[in-house]
Length: 214
Image 1 (cartoon, rainbow, N blue to C red):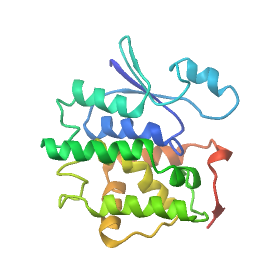
Image 2: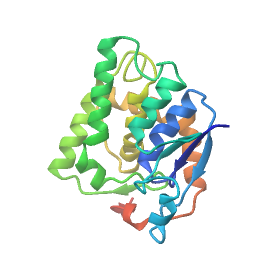
Image 3: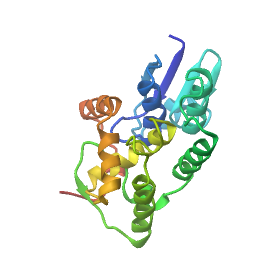
Image 4: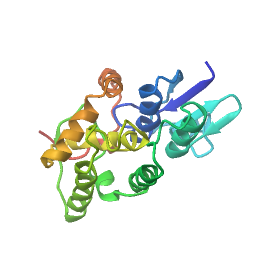
């Protein structure tokens, strides 16, 4: 097996989930290397795999890729024959736009609602968080009649997968169309495998235990 993917704790690591989900969803065989994100000795552990001391990292032969979107683009080019993005140029452009919006934006939701699959918690919804939720809800409500954001499952869906878990953990109520998309994403067989692994972990990262238990 030539492809390795270095990931963090599956209960918490949103960035790790995205390329992992793409590889699993498209049946690309890879070796999973899990590194604990516990604070003590973290930088040294991660530097063994990545020059940025961050996860995820894809390793294939002598190639190391240490950004989640760059990993997905590489997998799409090399292993998926372009099937990771929609078929038409118009949809590919839109898919890349919403993916990049997720990749670099929604800072308020990221800060207030860390992914924490094992938990059910309540956090304060500030105006900034509410604004992020409304924008994500609008993107999800505009999903294709297939149920995915575009005609078929794509990198765009992978990038919003951590948010589906976040909204579930913190009890975010969505309109009917956005909720339908969230439920479809959560029901993906590869998402179920990720949840199974997250529930089997026992490590706790205090920084990601936001809010109060419900």
